Length: 138
Image (cartoon, rainbow, N blue to C red; front, side, top):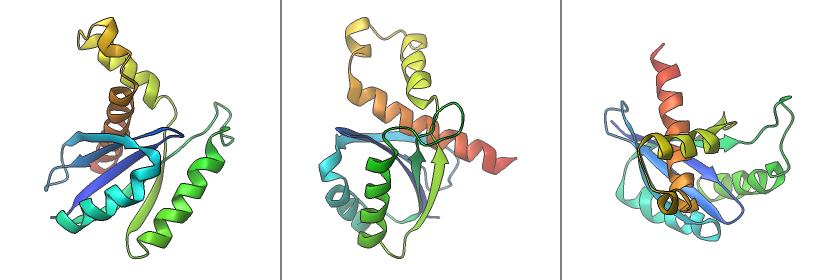
């Protein structure tokens, strides 16, 4: 069974998470510089079978797009041009970064480890993907 991949795209860094082959468990894959995302994904898709990509959709508390929405929308356009046959689903990403940071605290990571923004982005993508999987099971 092909994997599902989640992308937490940001201005500087992009967190990426992926499921196992049975699409049950989400795991952090990596964090990459955002400008390398398309090239990274081309390489990854050449090696792994992926059926769907989730891309975080940043929203404010009132449901309106956040200030980073135009940057992510441009990435979505670039992604769909680069991978026209890949199924893309947008997923609300509100609170994923806060949840990622709290997960780091709960895991007992030191203050210095919690300052690793790349790790926060990777965990946020994992939370986004695991939440999607949980909702899919219901």
